[in-house]
Amino acid sequence: MGDYLLEMRHITKEFPGVRALDDVHLAIRPGTVHSLMGENGAGKSTLMKCLFGIYVKDSGTILLDGREVDFRSPRQALDSGVAMVHQELNQVHTRSVMENIWLGRFPKTKLGSVDHREMYRRTKEIFDDLAIGVDPKAVIRTLSVSQRQMVEIAKAVSFNSRILVFDEPTSSLAETEVEQLFGIIRMLRERGCGIVYISHKMNEILRISDEVTVMRDGKWVATTPAGELTMEILIRQMVGREITNVYPEKTNVPGEVVLEVEGLTATYLNLRDVSFTARRGEILGFAGLVGAGRTELMETLFGVATKKSGTVSKGGRIVNNRNSTVAMRNGFALITEERRQTGIFGVLDVMENTTVANIRAYVKNRLYLSDRDMRKDTDWAVETLKVKTPSQKTKLRSLSGGNQQKVIVGRWLLTKPDVLLLDEPTRGIDVGAKYEIYQLMIDLAKSGKAVLMVSSEMPELLGVCDRIIVMSNGRIAGEVDARRTSQEEILTLAAKYV
Ligand SMILES: Nc1ncnc2c1ncn2[C@@H]1O[C@H](COP(=O)(O)OP(=O)(O)OP(=O)(O)O)[C@@H](O)[C@H]1O
Ligand SMILES: [Mg+2]
Picture 1 (cartoon, helix red, strand yellow):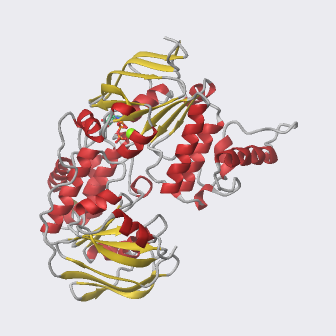
Picture 2 (picture 1 turned 180 degrees about the vertical axis):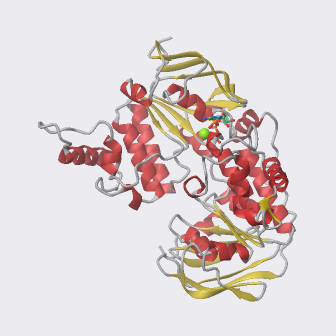
Picture 3 (picture 1 turned 90 degrees about the vertical axis):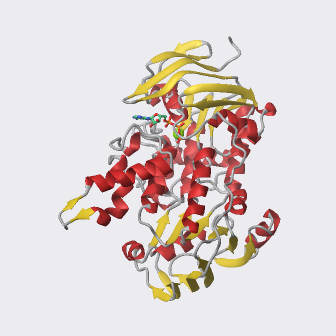
């Protein structure tokens, strides 16, 4: 005792149909980074929400500085020096950055009204301290997802807490921002804070942690000093068995050209004169730095962003994907990068979320929706993607973050597209499920589809793609053979027009 800043003992938490936490332990020493790992649905976020007063634990003890605490609201947790950056961003889009940071604790003038000048000063001070280049007066809505994430991080730091929880903070950050966050975390560690860091990115975990606790199916598996860990050990602890390959065997064979893109230029986005082809049975990767225009390209192909000029042909015929409905009819599907923001209907259940994009396929006699077909397809998606859910009737918002994403992936696969556009398809998804998604991509390619994948994970591009197109500042910088190229070659191309 006394060694630990925070101790969680024998924590148990049940939801209808799921034992989310089963006798879990976690102990954080001051001045250390303690990572929490585990597959989607292992209970990581739930454990932290029990600490933070969002969920009430069923049993167990939480000690802060050796004293028992039991927060009933985030407010209480914050007042006692525990802050948390959530997996889902929870911001008021129409208000300014500084208002979001000081919400509920606005500095007041002597007369009792909100002191905007003081609020600006304090915000600026924190941002300068953390080297965050966001205008405190900017409206949240106008920021990029990564900037919004950095605002959340700054907010957590602003409470001067001794315990900081980061739940998948880097899933939407660019590399430079990840470095910035790591700088902030190191600074907090030096100040003696205890940091809980949740991520699926193993290289990050191995770099930043002092200790790593792994959970599986709501249970504690192991706590190990980071220095003793390797990727292999971590994977074994997480999935409970040996995984010899992170990537499935590539059995797809590219055939004839099915997609031809010629001189594609977007109206409002940074995308200029993009030309390439994709073959049936091919997995075509798109590499580049953040801002290279890869997401913009996918959105323009799918018709959610407007194109200024250029042509897209499928199977030799020019297609004009004016909007996403037309794009779907033309056999395109897009799994977007920001699934949590754009794709999820939290109050609808798993089945409704799975079948919504394909709803026309279930209409019988133009009259009613076939419940049986919908159930069957949902079963397929749940099975194939190993979605962890008590039932098809479970509301999507009560699934773990990663499992929500799998449902969205299943939704688009069910539209049976000829051209599948995937934007960061494995972000936030655990290693085991990543393998399933790669396997699925290969199977889809084998069945004659063209699969286009944007990814920021270089090993993933090299591991599953046939060819990789490298983009730089809205243009194509080059094309490489995934089997012969190297990370260096790709990075050099990525910097070509920067
Ligand atoms: N509010 C809720 N209602 C019902 N079940 C829930 C609720 N919150 C979480 N669960 C369930 O508890 C289990 C653990 O979920 P949790 O969100 O803690 O997982 P996680 O480890 O954070 O996963 P991920 O890596 O996908 O974020 C899951 O089976 C999930 O469906
Ligand atoms: Mg989670």
